[in-house]
Image (tube, rainbow, N blue to C red; front, side, top):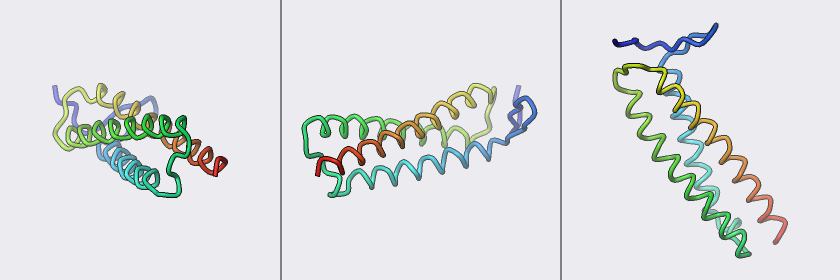
Length: 113
């Protein structure tokens, strides 16, 4: 059964397009974070920072791949859209978490220099 292009949440109704827009914005933000991390000014100066940076970059790369797959899926007609809603919310939360990791890394990097 095709549920159409509408999610139903308690009082709100969100379209697939709005979720797609959120994921696309999150993907673009992750690309910007990646650029920021590759800035020479934030080069790791200690082994611990180097390990932390590698972990962040790996998670960022995996999240970007997941975002691309999800965007491709959302652009197609979807059956059982509620399943994808959970994936979307999980990826958006991961994106926010990575943003905080990048900020913490950058602050740590600035304190050491």
